[in-house]
Length: 360
Image (cartoon, rainbow, N blue to C red):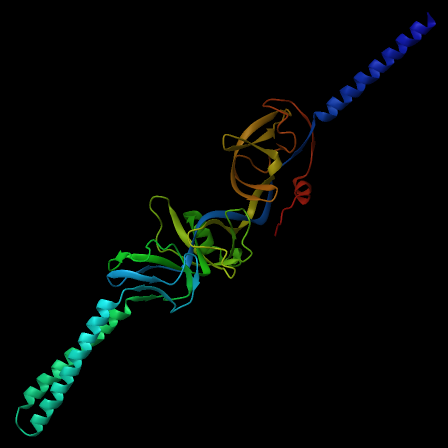
């Protein structure tokens, strides 16, 4: 009987201890960290979708009609300025040049004979002038024939990379027909659109932005190792979008960038007295960002916020909350509206000091 009483007592003690432990764990688990938004002078990197273009990109077109006799390059090949690219069958133009040369020679002989007769007063000086004009015309025709013949050889106007070659050997081509494109990729332009407020801030806050250096994030989410310079801004805003185009120039010594690529220009935007919160204090529903604000009764209320920019571990807030609010720092996925919580308040400067913020 004593054994039964002792066993029952021990069971009751263990049960009570277990319940107490679970209760304490539950209480500890329901205690949340809370902080407040914080104002700070800093900067953040903003991304702008950009179109990448070669500094020089041209269409190479035929200047004469004829059969494509030779193609001396291949698609994607790097060529040098003056290098022969294509040749149009020159037979017709060679014949025209020979004819023009013969006519020029005949006109020269005629002028010599007329000049001799003028010396002997057999013919007037007007006849000599007419012979001279005839020779000049023949020389002009010869020069034009040489020019047409030279157009049968298409050479690279500058060093660059050959694009697709749509025509094949033996194709009959017309004057002005596209043969290929040529891109100089030693340096690249990145065009990106900036809103009117950002444009005004950029133009007026010259001291705050420090310099015109920008980065480029490629399509594989890796940054280009070289920085670029914002060197020009278009003259007019787009009436439909309210944006204006900026152009940045990037070096491209490894020829990694090609004409027509896309990327994201990364521009450093300075911020004075910016309101920031930790990213982990937010949650997203249908592309809208929210935080939980703790009211005077220790109840949490969800509030929609507008994000102005992103930094490592931090969001820059446009509106929705103020520095006087208390926001839930951790456990945003564990609570719901009107839950009453027990919390520990952490000073925002202490919270931010443990993050990766690069403040000024």
